[in-house]
Image 1 (tube, rainbow, N blue to C red):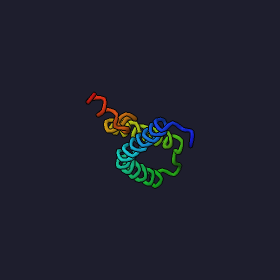
Image 2: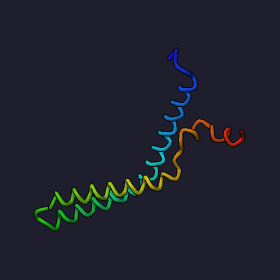
Image 3: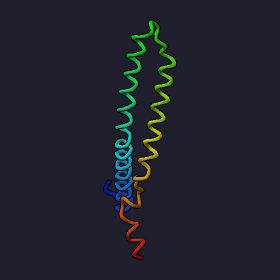
Image 4: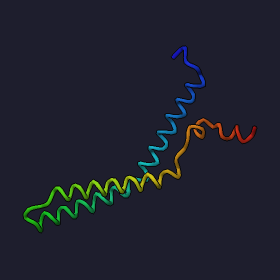
Length: 99
């Protein structure tokens, strides 16, 4: 680390910060829909197990995987509006506009 360029070190830190910031936005937008989908799924499984003697696990797991993927995609699309870039994390956009 002693021979590292200070600029590249700063850019690496900014990139890591932007990634963490974006991950936090994604998790924030994913939490509520995932909770609702999980509660509805649990209720449906309990109801189906009570009503049917043989529960069809394979189709249920396929549907659950599809719902999970859809919820994650929608949360990512919503959170993407708040994502930041490495340039924003370093504060270079403001200095470029002033120059």
